[in-house]
Length: 513
Image (cartoon, rainbow, N blue to C red):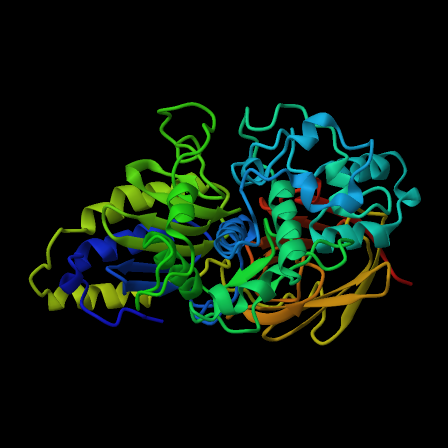
């Protein structure tokens, strides 16, 4: 769908170069949606054919910039007395001899700049490694329901029943607070916990009237809680927004916290600090956008830009020198390639003054905006010799880290359906078309939420059925192979975040008698 409501040339942007940029951007596999704004107006908007402007997409760490905005708002309201207030001062109920002297020196500013002193991000990863080791040693001993729950949440569950805030406050810190940048989603969760403590509201509820509604973000916005936290929003992840909503926030950040109508939502002094370099992050002058410095949950970029970003390509890039914003969602393995396309192919599109009208260029831009699609593999056809039409083949699964206990496969003349059964009884059905993608609502195959997925099926070889799956509101995409010749199921994706050992899973199958 095209959202470009004006001629880009009227805003000093070349339609021809915008079209080239969009082609390059969507040549990156699994980019989903894109909005480019200049002088506060949309000059280009593009989505792949299974995506739409209404899609609320997982933002992952782009959520952090919204949490930073909430800190700024609360600071402006006097609810946070100082960014140098000690973290422990907000949680006297968790103060104990288990809180180290180094932790007592951690302030809100240290959390904002990713300088609290942790060696890892605190909410991700370590638990999955131990689960993997347990599974490898004794598959039958691992509670598959526990694995499935952790897979579905995408988060580390703490080993004991301690509240997560207390767990993090009692952590040993490797470094002196403020001495070193260490990207840390746990730090942003702690900011969310502080905000809930001082406002008496969950983070999204606090922001509803102060940020979301002024930006045109509807009240049904979803921001996930950290499991086991008693309702505290993740802060560092878990927010779901449309590309247009990301762009609206980007425009606010570009203007230093001021809406187009002149209303100020975030204090000017806070926004100036938040978007400036506050801490070195891995060396000056290196030619990547992860080494340009870090502010308050915002990254500094090349070319005088700054950004909020989330894993696998969720972007709000603010370009002050060009008075422009780029918002995007994707499922990429290399986010630097996404930024490189902006620097190489979008920056040359901007001029300091309006350009002459170019109807031919605008027509080309419209064509490019509306011509994107996912590559879900070749069109297929039934293999009735392997699987008779309208019959179902059923298999039991060997112990596996996905927690699957059974698979069932059937096909009709237009496609195939793969049904998954998990150890706790939950089932998901993946529907795939041979000629056109088919849609499915998946509850567990994709981590975190129920998501619409689109899949195409093809028989890659006799007895070997392949599914290519896109999940437009998430970063997820999969290749799934079912081999009837030596019965097995193989699920593969390059994007699995904390639980990387689930990214490539092969499962032996046994035919049901």
